[in-house]
Length: 265
Image (tube, rainbow, N blue to C red):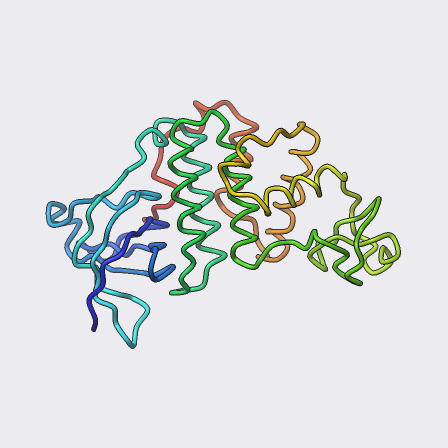
């Protein structure tokens, strides 16, 4: 085993036996990895962090060669993002970002750009009044940086530049020009402004995109397209997306309480 130190964001945690925790981290230097913290539930003072979901930590771990479960010997909290935890909708959006990383990123595949993006989003989410916009920007940028993005640069079938109307094909994962509509009869028409917004977000940094104006119709279509794309290609709806959808339909006092979204028992 080799000893390593790295920055890490907690994606998910669950109890292991009577005294320990197993935690999924997204790290700056090693990508997504899973660690076991032995004895932390019995003697929490042994670690300088409680490993809350989406907290930012520095961990020291022994990297095992023949196992994907590594031994974490030290965990020091850098930021717990307590201002996020004061608002249920912000907790939901932060938890969504953690679940999306879990789904998109393979084990131990370093992606420092997505790590920095996640950290930026969490920091801004603490004080920003539009958590839904931050989560949408994160979704588009994370898909692009992971190589999982829908194809909006040209026709996904013939690679022709699209001028004028286009349709989005879930099955093919991108836009179709008018000549290629027959390739997917289930493809849906999209607004030009929606395509322009996605391309702008993909091609500019996160903080620049915070100033991007977007009318409600385009935002709604962006949500529909991106969520449908994720559901289709992941073959399931993210649990945290279901929570966010529910938050949009019901009074908040019906939904407050219970365990953290990134915590399993």
